[in-house]
Length: 446
Image (cartoon, rainbow, N blue to C red; front, side, top):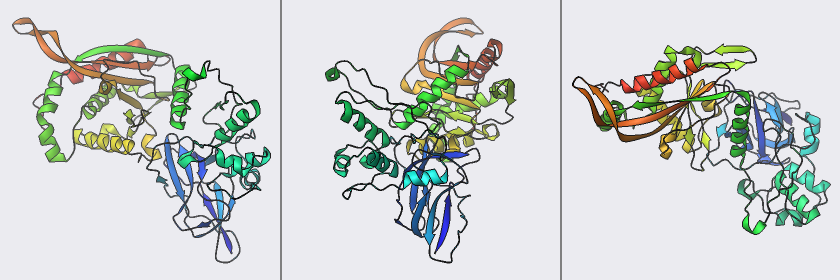
């Protein structure tokens, strides 16, 4: 028999680590070639890690919740063959992205170590609960806690799990222990840092009259969003500027050609690629918007990767990124926008699809909002918000004098980091975007 290493695969150019969310196989289980052995998470994307060999899972080197660097051995599988460890060939593979809604997941280990050593991880992952047989899967971490706290299998079986497929997670068992001991309101663990593997101590919830209060646990994506937004407000000095743009020509052009456009390119054209096109042009005029900050250094990006905030069916937002948008024509932008939005809404985004954005666009007009003050998507320094397009009477200058006409108007706002983007740059950039939209050629050919 030989032991084959299973490593954390590379998942994109800028992905250097991933969190092990859940082990699909336990030690001693038979594993088929290409069968999923664990579920991992990078940013907001879940990925399945398959085995590239057939055999028996002999070692699990990291428990659920651990952050593991790409290329690190995470498990060993025993295969038929000569003695000696065989190197893994999966370090360049891209994992399969899970096509499901993001579920709440077990929190990281509570031993206080940022990264467990293989010896520690193995010891944590392999305890067996010495009780009756289970009717559902329990992670090694849950089993370890249950054994330490003398929780019987009967008690475990009675717990309602909040994890995938009703599985009991670490927070479920901690909440049960708190309630078991105090007999009062269940305390839920809070996460001190979502990028860390250290879980903060449980904090009791003061909910007042429980008959009139409902406690809703944040899912993992909402925790990530909350952490990212709070961090951005702490890091950047946010300032927001506003303009109103007359987009009548653009709207009339799009409405007039959308049927022919779909027939020619096989794509539905929305306003988003038209907004992205204007943003790209404006960035070329004001390249110091396309930067990031590292300490006291300004990093100027000579490429344009435009993020487009996309609403998911569960109400959360994710920001897929159009790479090298400045090299695309309108047809290319339309195709990229449609593909990324579709992948986002069907949970098929790959980790690399949401990495390396240099500027972000969010369209609050899709919610019927006039405008907004968006939070900067770190480490970028500016984010554009486009509002709903409405018809309203405005004063229009003509060769015969000023007249009042019904025009299609849209509010836009730009939030920018005042540490490095002053009012002149931020305001001028926003005005330039409006100028490109207002100057849209209504006779443009598709």
